[in-house]
Image (cartoon, rainbow, N blue to C red; front, side, top):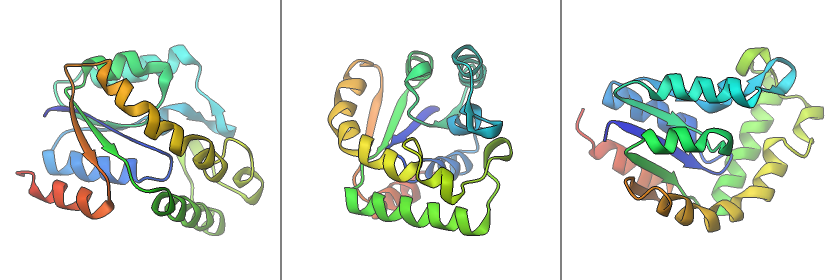
Length: 172
């Protein structure tokens, strides 16, 4: 377990979990959202995004989080493990809702100077609507995605408590 992808629906805690996992394993962490969300919430051009993923995953060991299909063929082919945070809908919805409200009220600076606002929080591609569009679809699609890369080891974590326990069980 040296090249690890952390996947899950928006709001599942991919980045927080991936950071903790990378720290535990003492390997670099890569966040696909940081490479995708350019200033003004503009998406990175596919070739630029793919170049970021390719450069990061060229390392010997890493943890990367994100679900972006535009570079899946690179990251998934180079990974040896997929950690799937597959939490129940109500758990994830509560997380994404409270995270969005916190970011709006605190004006937290995100990737490349972006901030969530009340206006951006209601756009169709913002986290809360995105959760409703993708949560159950991802749950249906993930087993097939993992099966398409038979070299991968799947770690399927179904609750935050299970995720914490699994993480704590890893040797430092």
